[in-house]
Length: 305
Ligand SMILES: Nc1ncnc2c1ncn2[C@@H]1O[C@H](COP(=O)(O)OP(=O)(O)OP(=O)(O)O)[C@@H](O)[C@H]1O
Ligand SMILES: [Mg+2]
Image (cartoon, rainbow, N blue to C red; front, side):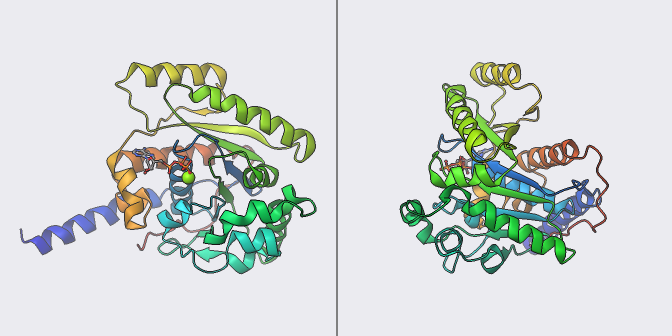
């Protein structure tokens, strides 16, 4: 087989795998589900989980918006979205509507992203003296959701990627969302970090958003061969039996390579173990959100990237 033929057959194989999965649409929730992906610990897989679960839900035919609320802009990078124009800074500080800054994500018919532009790093300082500064994202998001609904183009999922802190950006995300997804890397001190998040969440619940709660916990970069990973998983299972999605995301090279190609692992290598795990997790999330819901009527989304 020539090199060219080998490439073609690899490409064909990839798209066939993708197509097969896409023929199984995921169930749509009855109302838009609003997720914040939060953990103030750095590098635990917040962004990786945000973009891959969002991509997988979109591939399942659901309409998904990712809000990149981390000035590092890693979610934009993984989704191949430009960070040079207007973005979340203008939304938070200059009252730009969400509709004005949202980009379509190339290759996915139902996936869009509100970018973290470079200026977002200055947003927390600029917001300090603003009125109702914790609720700016909530109001902007509600307006956008209403517009979309009125246009007959309702979003199914909004997923907000947070920075590794519990500052004003994360507080805005917790105030705007209904559900919190906490990625946990199975290592020492993982659960200590969660207790700080839980106490911050309790303050947000009391003062700003009584509906928000931890609905979903995901084990990331899981290495089943280590005793520590299994011990932490058992601890998490004991503390959060309902919230834990018991499909750990394995530590996998393809997952970490994908962003350098400005892709999610769902398009970069759909048949790799990391992509398969994220697809299963997304399906589980969609199923959990479907008490009294209907099957999606949209066509499953094709990957064109
Ligand atoms: N399942 C995985 N297998 C291998 N590498 C992974 C996996 N998940 C994430 N990584 C890598 O670990 C690093 C941290 O992941 P990620 O950026 O998603 O964490 P984060 O919580 O968003 O970080 P930050 O707190 O800086 O925003 C990245 O380099 C990412 O590519
Ligand atoms: Mg991140």
